[in-house]
Amino acid sequence: MEIPYEKTVEDEMKNFYDSLSEKDRRRYAAIEVRKLAYGAKQYISTILDCDYKTIERGLLDLKNEAELKKNEYGILGEEENKD
Image 1 (cartoon, rainbow, N blue to C red):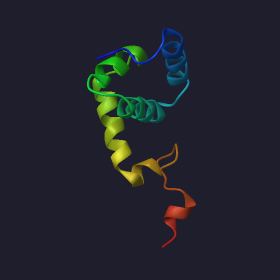
Image 2: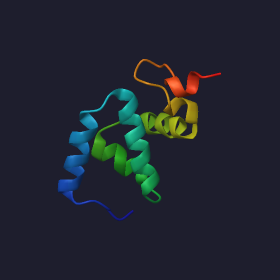
Image 3: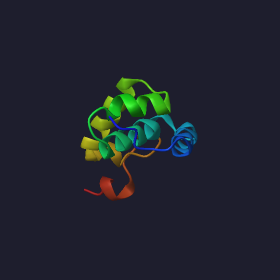
């Protein structure tokens, strides 16, 4: 896989990643993987220094719309609770 990002961008990505909560970290890593081609999981896990399983969990989160709507306390937002 060709390296898609310059070193300065990789450093900015890592700094941003480090500022996020664990839930947001895995989702951010998953989004970055989805943007790239074959080999992206290895590349992103190396840049962000995260476990492969973190990315896999993030990819599952992205597929699960209800999971994405949960706030930091695991509670669905007001819009979603209206029934």
